[in-house]
Length: 241
Image (cartoon, rainbow, N blue to C red):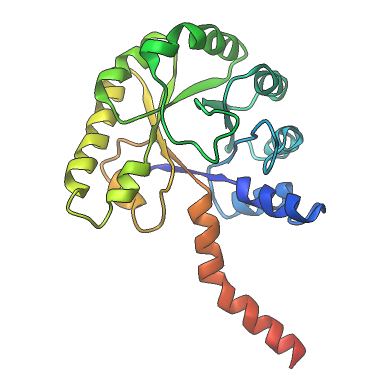
C-alpha cells in the first residue's frame, strides 16, 4: 500500500486570497486525516503566498492528536525555512531545489553540484530526528549518491510521467520511473513521488509497490471541485428555492 500525504497549499492560497482564515488550514487537515489520509504536506515558500510558517506550527500541534499520521514540510533549505523546520520538527522534511521566484517545483537536485551544500543541512535535520527526503529527477544513476550524502528517501519528480500519461511515450517513461525507484531501494532508500499526480495516473505508478508515499495537492483540489461542485450548486438552489 502506498501512503497518501495530502498537500494543502491550495487551501492556504484560497484562504490568503481573501484575507480571512477561511478555509481554515487546520480544519481541512483534520478533515483529511479523519478520512484516512496518512499525512499532510505543506510547502511554505519565502513569500508565504499559500502555506505559511505559522501553518507549520499549527499543523504540528494538530498532528499530536494523530499519532499514526505524519507531517511533511517541503521547501528550499534557506535559513528561514530551516529555522522553522527545526523549531517544528515535522516527521519528514522534503528538500526541494526551488528558486524563490519559481511558480512551482520543476526539477530535482543536481547532486554532483549540490552535494556539499546539502550534506550539512541533511545532518542538521537528521540530528533532530527528522526524516530527510531529496526531490529528484528519475535518474537511476543518482540514487546511490542521494543515499551517500545522508538522505533517508527520495521523492521522484513526476511531471514528465504525468505529461506522458495516455500517450505512446508512457511505457518508456513508466519504466524509467520504476527503474529509478528500484535503484533507490537497492541503495537503501525509500521512495516518495509527487507533482501532477492525479486520480487517472497515480495507480499505474504505484501498483508495483515500489513507491512508499505520494504527495498530492493541486490535482486533488481540482478533482474535489469537479466531483463536488454539482452537489454544492444544487444545495444552494435548494436553500434558495
